[in-house]
Amino acid sequence: MPEMTYAEALRDGLRVAMQGDPSVFLIGEDIGVYGGAFGVTAGLLQEFGTERVIDTPISEAGIAGACIGAALTGMRPVGEIQFMDFVTLTMEQLVLQAAKVRFMFGGKASVPMVLRMPGGSGTGAAAQHSESLENWFVHVPGLKVVMPSTPYDAKGLLLAAIDDNNPVIFVEHKLLYKTKGEVPEGAYRVPLSATQVVRQGKHVTVVATSIMVLRALQAADELAKEGIELEVIDPRTLKPFDDQPIIQSVKKTGRALVVHEAVEIGGFGGEVVARIATSEAFDYLEAPIRRLAGLDIPIPYNREMEHHTVPQVESIVQEARKLARGEY
Picture (cartoon, rainbow, N blue to C red):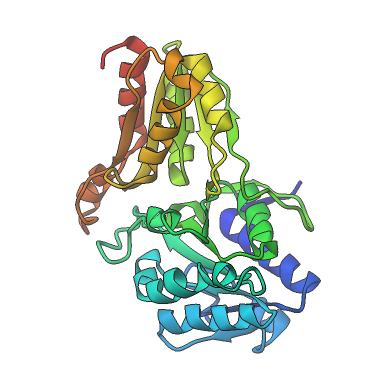
């Protein structure tokens, strides 16, 4: 398989979808001539034209509203929000309209749209351009939420999201865009509810999302030198959420650590902990379930402070080591 960056895999997924279905189009700020804030849509304007790659004014509510309206009339729009922080301006459209239409009309109408957005910290973009707000949308019935961590998953999940007849929030971490991996040519789909065990281990189950999957894998490499084997699990889709691989893993290891970048209070880790605690895995626990998440503060501009605001490889190593050794 050819190797692609995460951004290239997304672009290839968009290209495959647009080639295969004329109802798929792209809409967002600077996605055409400029090629997107992070270059994901570069070259697609030249390939598909201005009717299918649409540059918009600076209005996130307008982008979301256009996607909803187009989806209701049979199109499959893929909108782009330049930074996840700005999705706050779309909440009425997404929460009160897109998420509810199919239910309020008894299934006679659907909203097959995808809203892509780069989230997360690590680029020195400060408090208004570095947030992780995915769990806001997990809380809303009618929305699906996807957070791929690899180029392979990015393309496969994006194609599955475009196929889906429900509105999908598609979160791409900014630090992942330049990461590389093998990606098949052509069309393939990763199901929107298929949690994956990405590394086998026997001492501690680590459930991580997005960029934290890569950091958990690095932490696993470090701890393997000490004889501590982490089992790393990537949900990939937060909603719908496939919890069975996690439950089975915790039954094996007896210890669980949940890692995400969003702040701990109200974060997705709480849902993971609840699923474990209310399942048969509870009786197999040999230690309290631990969470490692972002601090409850806005992301600082200062790069050193930013680094310490969210979990890093070293903090995952420390927390997993304590769990494995019973030092909790």
